Length: 340
Ligand SMILES: [Zn+2]
Image (cartoon, rainbow, N blue to C red; front, top):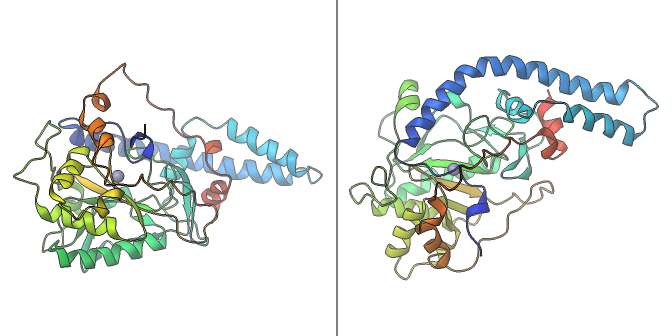
């Protein structure tokens, strides 16, 4: 059976105040960040040094011997090295723009930053430094922000895109690794420029009644549907992720206009924001495309599964997945990490 479970769109379910818990966790992680940074610099030096030592120390080494040495060096890294290394890169890799690997297992070269202010958008949570994307995504978001005004959406509050070099993150998302995913708040941009402080602390609006999986009719408006519909209709967009209850609401309200629903996929989380995922830009051989979503409006059996108890069972406490290792990422991501 096809479900959205494997779509790599989000973390596990968030019940009740989990959003706030996640924020607190993020603050704690940031405190730990300075230590992680120091460790990462050492590690980055070690990794780069290890690679060059392996490739230059013995000029007679064959390519396969060098590869073995690199593999051994990577195997010796701590298990969370990849996310610490990618999470501590403050600047993009100065290379040609490439999304490398898959949405939940890859990295990004030649990223550009979403400008923090635009005529119809503002970027939130600047301290996270996750406003980086493939240039195609950034220009898509800029024009999408402008066009959404035609639907009466005042402007976008832009949440996480990717880290400067993409890759796995210390907190949050499983995907967002190759600069083609962006979270957009369900709160429209206010008519004034938010201060840096407000961008850290302002809460997004949940479309669900607190602590439930039901739409809050006092918050939900047809504008929410229009802005998601516009994203889903864009040819460069592969998928838009929303909470199952929100998808259900769209299914009920869409009437005969149902084509756009195909790309709108139910997933955990995503009731404070929706998630736009672009398809791989043309000509990027290293960018791993996801299968197209199944035909149809997705309002049938798959959604019924999401609305039932199955996906939300606390079930045997799930072991947290081990972090991605450097060796799990495409080889080209090593170059992205160390390029200066
Ligand atoms: Zn997301």
